[in-house]
Length: 208
Ligand code: 3PG
Image (tube, rainbow, N blue to C red; front, top):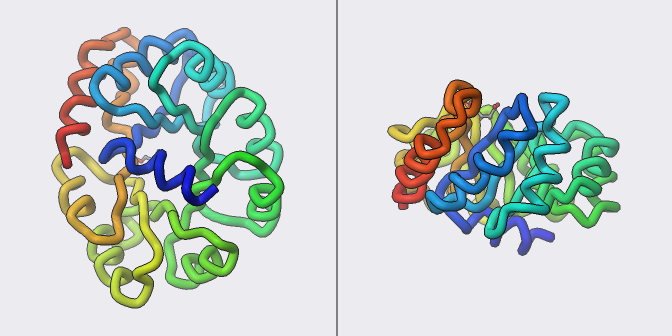
């Protein structure tokens, strides 16, 4: 499962973090992201439309690798797997979620914000983690400081990152990609500005 997480995270420099209010937007949005060079998409479980959106993308969008974000519980993990999610992302960890992830086929990218959480996750077999919330937790300086004592762990920092700050993260040896919501802003989703989203994806894909 760590290999699956790694190959998903290496698809592009950015994983868009999506908050979707209308499941009908899911397919054109995902097609725009894929067309712009961004195949791995995290749809967060923050809206009632999220599971339907994941299902639609999984079934209809060729080239997309749809994941589920904001996973807090075993129940979330089961529902997302059933909907067709290919990976899961959590903002942090709990013993219950880690046990559920061990029992699930769905690979988990768990969130960590301290060296102790990183060590706990290393003990449980994780080598790919999300740093969350990346900028408030210490940003690229924190990751730079972890690279020496914790070189075996690679990160997808997420939270507070933008197109202009992404290169500070992507240049670090322990960063595989970054996450961010800037590729799918609410106004572009609501107005159906798929060309605008494709352009944002293209800029993000060119970061490497
Ligand atoms: C979130 O919490 O929604 C994600 O971490 C994305 O954060 P961002 O909106 O700061 O990119």
